[in-house]
Image (cartoon, rainbow, N blue to C red; front, side):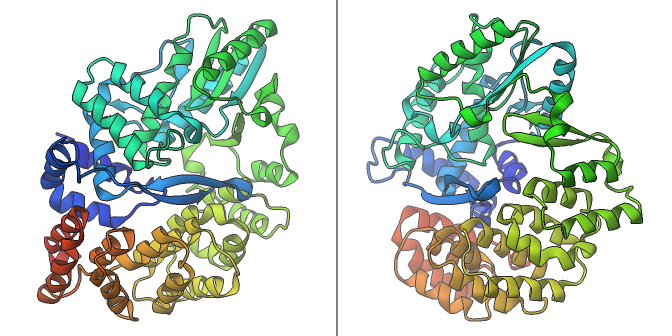
Length: 499
């Protein structure tokens, strides 16, 4: 029967900063980890054991914006997935056919895919736009970063079926991981946090004072539909008042009245229009967060003709290429990754936010030597990187480039560039490469007695050493803190063939 571990593993690759250190602890120490949380961290008898304040990180967003969040340590991450999984029945389906919300819950034993839910949502927008004359769309400004700790804690405690123990532990968890600050506490990019954020907004869906014929919502993207524009206006005021009770505000720049799906293409870039002409079976839907292109025919990706591929590659060279266009083109060309290789330097330089997409594409690149050279040149030629870029380039090296070309130089360069970014540097340290001076670098972190991501990742990076050498280093490291001990014991259990 599926459990917390399956939930974590299924969501792992979709998170913003997936650290394999956490997976190692999960796979080799799950039972003891759960016991440590319940008998030590959550026990009043052990005041020295708590959830730690979490490491601040910044992921990228379109147009140079940053997403501020935290990377959870192995203990905190397991707790959040576990408490949400055990209470998964409080995350309900949509309220009614007139009050629609999509995804971020469990169905038939598994969590609903974000992609599947989003496709259902965009299809709903097209359907409702055809049924009603008027539409109002908006989203909440910086939703996760402005939620108030006590509002979420009280909502969770009041939910049917939540035990007093779980209610208290969730409130404590959110308070302690954020060092007592009451806002900016909810982690981004992990499914259980998204479930919480989505379910909290059911208060809007269930409000009896709203009169719109249909309200369709994907997380904090709202779409109101009705034949009477005055109804939409009145509901817009009411929703803002409801949100205001929790310190939440609507984003003015993403609020649109009567901007229907039918006239979206008028505002598209010429390049985007060219893209639609090249690839048949594509519809454009506008949500509060921008334009979304829906792939109506799944087989269009694998069924591109050579002429279509050539035309799409030509668009990648266009100086007017926008990030959304590039992202869509890369999606269509994902089975033609070798053709994209020559465009990779430009894409890496112009679109930092696409690095995770490029990571996935590079899995099928056959010329690994050329790929490693392109990555190294990019790291040497650019003057500034954000942490998200360096992190995912390190993931790319570990998963797609180990042993190929100049990958050792790439690792060393990544380590040097990540001086100001703890999670990106930790990602480099957890890669189990023992050459190029990395073993010696890890040794320094393991000897200091520090208990943070740099030392935990260094411990994980020793997993391919011979058992005696590995355990000698981990024995001293494990004495630094309870989490050090948990990580050390987990790594010791890794079989050499699994490392």
